Image (cartoon, rainbow, N blue to C red; front, side, top):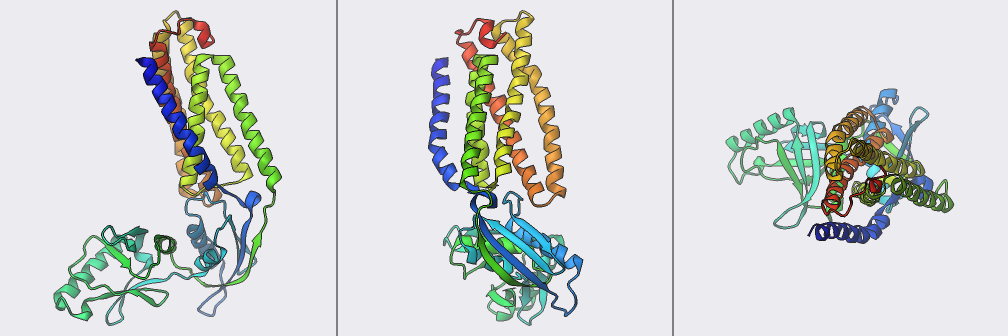
Length: 408
């Protein structure tokens, strides 16, 4: 019965992994060094007819980074050039014109009453997310205001419902983007929760989601003009990509052979868990639209080595228990129980470091923190949960009685 359970788990994971490989590889995005992309140069201009300051350029850089690479995993190049220019390089862009249009938009959001009074702006936003209306399937944007914005919105909507009849046009609040009216909804009741919607005029969910991303990043502090736009080729080329693939394959094979030679049966189980680990990490990276560069490929291989460390700590503890004279089954239970604290402590401290990097870092630093966290969680899931389950079940069948099968 235990062998049936073991085989069922292995088969399910193997089949699921096999089916997921092609979709993951097809959707994996490559960086500028491997795939090329779009090179854009922006010229900043102060609308107040003043000189563009260093602070203006810093704010412009920050807003652009939020627009094109919120998590920092897109490997986007954003760097100032001179006093009033900003270089942006986007890897693997499918629609260059759409990307450039999004970069150049001011995205200044305003909420106005019928008499033209501006009550809220994009600075009062806490979040904006593209979504579909569950009833009509119409694309829309859900807005959430910050504390001050929620308070003002509640006061204004309460005032409008108190002063005007339900069908009075003066009861509406217009939502404007860059001085263009997006929608002019009627206020049916006071809205105390600080939430609103922008609906109508969106051709697709992608369009609504792209606009929501602009709103989350905020309006540009200065006007910008696109003075250069061109497509750039990969800096390293296909040859480097093929060599990187070979390095990953040989690196994984080397790790797997090492684990089997040193730890025998546990090593074989760890190799299977490592395969699941690799698919999990790459799958999540595809899910968050991460871009893979040549250093990123090296980092993935390094993360596999880090995942092996968890298994080595556990297996060494199991061998120590065997040398103390305990049975195989008791040694496995004791080894996992005593090693888990060490593994968790090491991973938690690394997660704390990743959280600090993400909070205070920008661009690639935040991207490194995200991918590091993904690797840690996947490592814990496979080494502590999957490897433990399979090893305990195999030992419980009674077919492994010799310490030599554990390399002890």
